[in-house]
Length: 106
Image 1 (cartoon, rainbow, N blue to C red):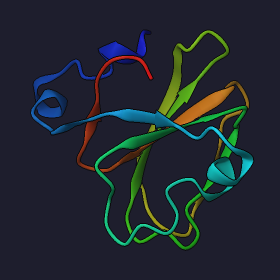
Image 2 (image 1 turned 120 degrees about the vertical axis):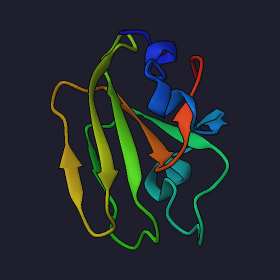
Image 3 (image 1 turned 90 degrees about the vertical axis):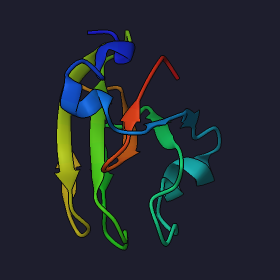
């Protein structure tokens, strides 16, 4: 499934779309969306990532797991703070603030 097709149904399509940024440095990958007091106006793509934690987060995340070709492997919706999620098939993940949708490829 193409990442641009995630916003397929009417309930999701009515959410505000946010751009996708890529965590380009090791520090940015380590930090992820941690440290934001409120959900940021963007989603964050983490390459070479199979595990995400939300310890210390102040808001829930939707996690979109991608394989090596960028196809969606799994979506974890509404992961609350203080949790760990793992997807062994994934090679990247997009952290999306709950209530937002992502359009287009990162």
